[in-house]
Image (cartoon, rainbow, N blue to C red; front, side):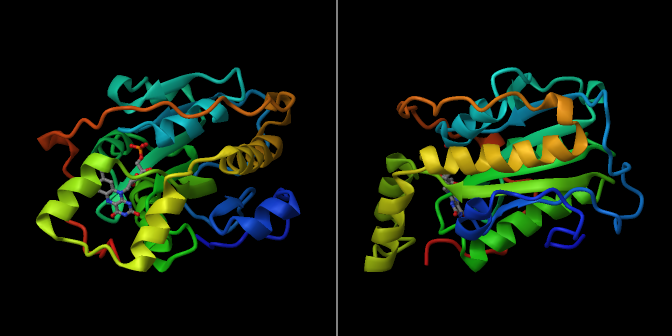
Length: 244
Ligand SMILES: Cc1cc2nc3c(=O)[nH]c(=O)nc-3n(C[C@H](O)[C@H](O)[C@H](O)COP(=O)(O)O)c2cc1C
């Protein structure tokens, strides 16, 4: 899997490419073996499936329906054999896609995947790149083809920050405070527009007829309480540091 668009890949608007290090349209890709063909597909069936605890990834997922695609939470996972192209949303937990997303992805094979996610770290950081690599690896291991990806910051729950402060796991340095303050403003309208531009480029390359006219930006975020349980533990431990 290359991490750059191939020369004949659909183009993202230049402003999106320049400003978003993890907004990519990667179709069509000719160099991936054992994966579904690159398209285009007149009858392509697409859906959005997301995992979200505090609502950041859900906001992106809702926008990616473009007003007409089916939307599912991983807690009510659909029969994915009914779809050819899936936009799969995750949030980063300890350097990896969250456990519910991982569990959902374990049953997904030989699909075209648009991968999107939110995290507290800077989206251009090595930590973000490694998170995306980890997500990519989980999906490509099952013969899926990554046709696009998008990552942006998402507000970190105050409950988590308070717990971390109590435990003293991550000292509140000036750099960390700045990062968390910025994360608290995301995903914003710019993130949502960039994610949709990326997704539209994928759809335009694979199934031009599936791209409806642009929608107006979504309304402001709402608050959601954090639900943590044993089931949110990742399937394997993360080697990746977070909090620097
Ligand atoms: C338990 C926990 C662990 C987290 N670990 C990381 C991490 O390793 N790296 C990171 O960048 N953000 C991490 N975050 C921040 C979340 O990825 C971020 O807030 C995300 O937008 C939450 O998405 P959601 O609102 O869709 O649930 C963590 C958040 C929680 C609650």
